[in-house]
Length: 145
Image 1: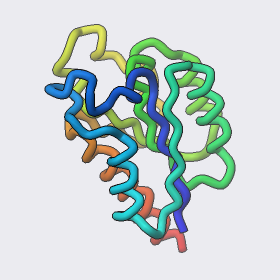
Image 2 (image 1 turned 45 degrees about the vertical axis):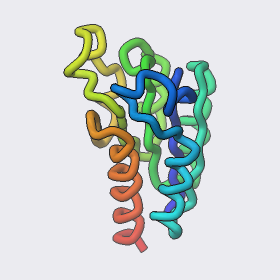
Image 3 (image 1 turned 180 degrees about the horizontal axis):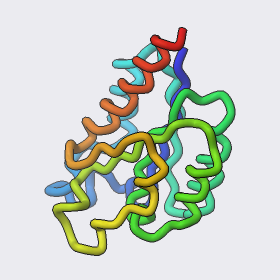
Image 4 (image 1 turned 120 degrees about the horizontal axis):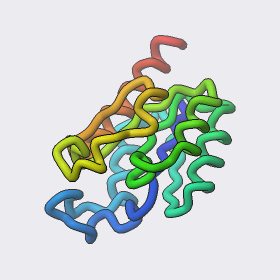
């Protein structure tokens, strides 16, 4: 059975109401329920925080017993050396996910401090990016069984 930690950064608690033209109109809790239904053989854990330290601690905690981490650091993507260092310090593979395509937005969003330390990045596909990342870890878990 795969065990995956999904971590969302700042302002993603507002999904469904925040800039729906960019982020869509579905809240993450409803989407998480759909993901759990789609991947019943995966134990999906979820944390959203607006605080950088909470995200660092969640990444560190997921180093034990998790198949993978699906991480949307949100605005911290472009600013957080601490989150990048947390990823670098662990063995659990991380996939970076972004609902929008940061490279198609303001220039300051073009830099990701975490991209050098993740196994892959999925961006611009809306919430579908989370499904693709979970699916990857679910498939890898089946191969390892």
